[in-house]
Image (cartoon, rainbow, N blue to C red; front, side, top):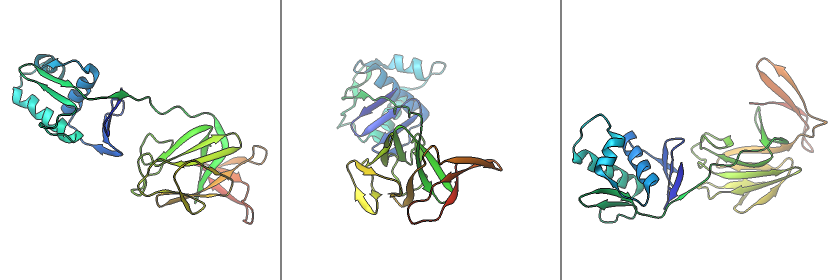
Length: 236
């Protein structure tokens, strides 16, 4: 289950809660309680029902449950007086009362294309369709840099065309040295900067690309960009 509400997203698959692009810590019990309230929305869950799901073999006081509710409210940015999402049903239990919608997981990428993102001794193969670039561990191209947002940018490959777009990142996406926002066409040899990390976009025609093995790393021969010398790059 992946549910968005306000500026928050709860992902049951990865066991994560986000506010915007930032992960927010919740204890395992608090995460499970928020998950239960979202699953049951807008129906109210009694305290007995919650106890059976979270503490099936233990007795806990109502104060323990109240502390979990307080933890959730702090994590999602609301107070008891401003309960937009977590509603207290006095004498009964709790309910998730705000607007929420399930969001699908990122679509699976297609087959490998002839497009590559090249950085130093790495050549990252892009796939047909959309690829997310970012710091998130679920991104199609993960860039582990603090200058990179979790979902920083996307690149769309459609046969012989590539399009780059920023996704509202904090530190910006740059194509050929210029900061972009909306979708922009990109081509062979273009520089792409994601935060402070720079790549070169390359096209490897099928009839000109070869690969051999050196040790455990495949080395791919990439045709040089105009005005440069031919070289080899290691693929991850």
